[in-house]
Image: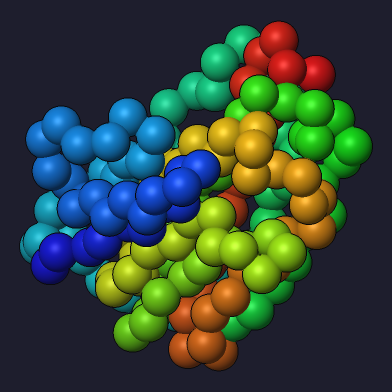
Length: 153
């Protein structure tokens, strides 16, 4: 299965192939299960934890959540002052999962079987709007963690 990750930078749309070597340092994806272990989860709590390795010491968790279909989060005021925000998510379903703010796509991915874990760094220029929406059809389940790197509080 090939999964794509979509991350929007300041002026360019960057498409990154999941699990490929190299790629854009601002958007990466990893897979946790081998094909023989893959089973599509049926609820968000059965998805893998999107935080695959410990977050840097001093990071601030701005939002942790899960759901099915559309969702939203309102980030703290400190997020608007950060040089960047890190978003980690996983999703399962036959469609895409997108993270938007003020109608602009910040990041997103194709979902598939839920084995892909995605990370995107959202630069300060794209963090003016603190009300974020998660867009997906009701057939998609997801888990997401949004963090602010250390020194950006």
